[in-house]
Length: 219
Image (cartoon, rainbow, N blue to C red):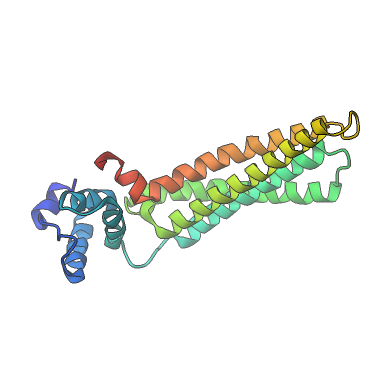
């Protein structure tokens, strides 16, 4: 619920049927009093709003300008490129016909991007500690959602491709399509990188999603 300061300043949230100016004025009051979007959403639900509309409206309390767009962009892209570079390098090392130039290129990308990702993650933590509203950044939600989606797609495509190879080998005449242990090792490498990356990015996306992180306790 809203803090005592917010409640004392403007205790009666507008009904869902009231004109937009009333809602905007109330959201500004709540934002200036330090209320977070989940707290505002909870109060709107108590006033008769649906959960979905309350989550959407509560984001209107944020500043109109997103001040950390470059930080979230740099964090997600550097982390993603570091993961892709590491995975590709390991794939080349496990391949029967490795490409040294490609392995050197992808390893270089990974070694450059990984420190940038760690630095951006540290700066993001500092930013979220200094401002309780940073976690609700629209660009934060966008880039973490994009990273989680891309990671899930890559991991699933790799897993499905390997399972198809296994099925095709089992259904082919004996010995015509032999199974290669390198394929299994490469899939394990992909999953070992993709699963932690997806878990991290999806968790961060959930933190920025008011409808999920802020309204669960209101159900």
